[in-house]
Amino acid sequence: MSSLRMPQGSSSPLFKTGASILDYEIQEERGYALGRAGQRVETALAALRAFDARGGPVDERPALLKEAAKAVWYYFIQREACGIRNQKPAIEHYGIPREVLMRLGAS
Image (cartoon, rainbow, N blue to C red; front, side):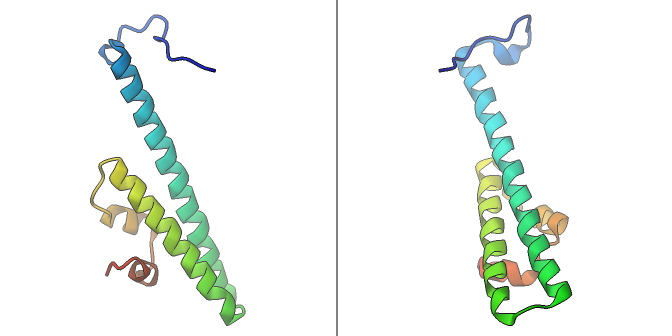
């Protein structure tokens, strides 16, 4: 079992109280979760793009599209949990296709 403790030699005002240490840990975890969600988006969109580039059995595409939409949805939720409400920069950064966004109810 681990416990929270003050960093040695830290004079930062961030580490003045136990509450600030906890806040720091929470923010760190949010950032990590956001990064993991972003990686999931990248992976799902890459699979969808690769399928579209090579062509393949038409019946496989809906599953890839569904996975991409789910990954984007989780990512948007995690961004909102971090206080980021504007999804447009993420849509542009990842090049999220309109087809995926429409599955989320966005246009």
